[in-house]
Length: 166
Image (cartoon, rainbow, N blue to C red; front, top):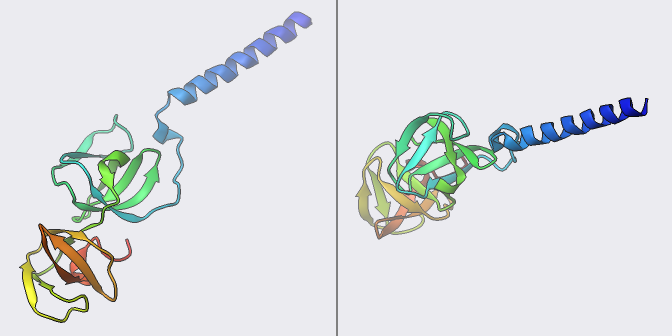
């Protein structure tokens, strides 16, 4: 009977160790939970970023972005991976290390005036075509401070993708 208990205990211990090793060997995304801090705006921080169809390196690459600073919407957080949506509506997973919390925006729709004053008054300093990328400051009262390659001014919030509530 004592020998039988020893065998049962040994088998149980072995099963626990095997289970722990099995979990440790699994990719983090398979047992990581959403941390609840999404959605939020971010931007691509590298010159090249791969978007994958799933949250892991074993998933195929769906898109390769070559536009540092491109604004994206982070929809979900899972371990070291982020489910993002780009300005064209494409969704996929990128490594968190390829994202920055530096805010950016894209001009959407029509040619948009960049104005001198934060309330939209004042002269038009420049005009930005759809797709122009800008560094984005804190938007207030429907107007956002932008910087397009050193050209600073204010743009209506509704003319920008990447501004407002994600």
